[in-house]
Image (cartoon, rainbow, N blue to C red):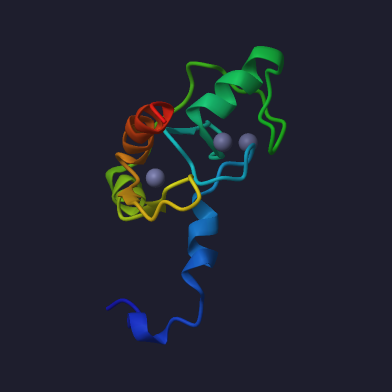
Length: 113
Ligand SMILES: [Zn+2]
Ligand SMILES: [Zn+2]
Ligand SMILES: [Zn+2]
């Protein structure tokens, strides 16, 4: 039997911290997992590998084609995240899956003003 959720003393942000990118320190987006088991956003690690051949975290050599993606379990954890809109004065909350799309749409709308 697992541990009763009510017994957790952590703020959930402690847990969310495990889901951050070692390069940008934001919540992982389009996660890539290196052979050394370090996690990065696809965009962050692609950029990094243009200039470096090693992991930014542990300095082990990494190959651009040696990455795996999240397990279904991790995907589910990400999908449970709710993201506040990046624009001030906007109280839209989106899911991890569609926040970029939704913000892009209303960026188009704001451009009209
Ligand atoms: Zn990143
Ligand atoms: Zn590493
Ligand atoms: Zn908004």
